[in-house]
Length: 72
Image (cartoon, rainbow, N blue to C red; front, top):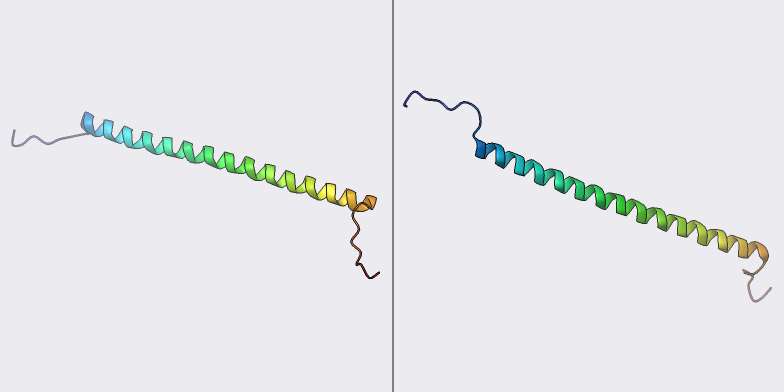
């Protein structure tokens, strides 16, 4: 057995490599989910801002908001 050399990988090495790869893929999927949630939240905030601006502009155009100083 002195001249015997290991060639290839053992089953334990393969299982450990698969576990590490699986954890990496699981973490990447979690990050992707968080990115999608953040994108959706940002989109809702942007739509809210556009809606608030539109309502404000409409009220201003209708004369409901007056930006005149008290002295005039």
